[in-house]
Image 1 (cartoon, rainbow, N blue to C red):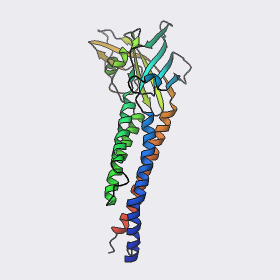
Image 2: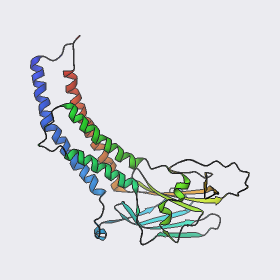
Image 3: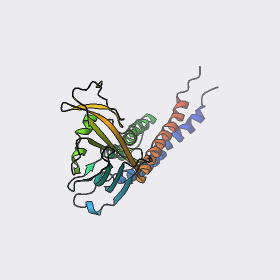
Image 4: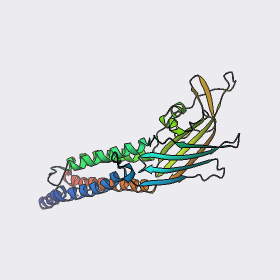
Length: 287
């Protein structure tokens, strides 16, 4: 096997120059169009114009038959912020239904959505810095840009696919617990998060452990979802999770956004692969 001839190298160089001048910019334009659409879905309402933004309503349900928890998120501002919510919780010990709603003066911002949006916008900034007038001189330069864009897109996708793990004391003292009216009782904790294309709500029912209990106390660590039996200490009091209820619903535009991320990452990788093909020819050294 021998390397490319001088004539073949000339053709390859001409094709590679066309790739750098034309095809790279075509791919960058395609990436920008896709990511602008993704960013638009993460848009934040302009102050004073919140009412003009489309409100989305979601009913969170469970596949289990116990039906201990009902939740209706009445309005969601593009899921950037939960602005109204009803929770009906039926306790096992009293068989009573407790009703909670968000305070009128509060919006709960979903950090995962905000972080994902920021990463998308950083990817767009990287792309906009290389408009059609910019001339890429080497394949390594293109690869460096693609790697930087792919890093931001991977981080954006991971924020939606990997909810943050939290300890039970962190949940107990989070701002979300101050969102409700009437206030949540001391033996109930809640957590909202995004998992892939789903909006999830978990409610933990607790019972206080006796100070002189002989039961082995072992605080649980960080987790997305804590199981019954998990223990924690807060303000010198010990608690154990007695029941866990989880409800969720699919948010269609989140699913579309994840697809946008996948397509964009594929476009970046395909461009890197094309450059790699040319590099393999030039780097060929016959023994």
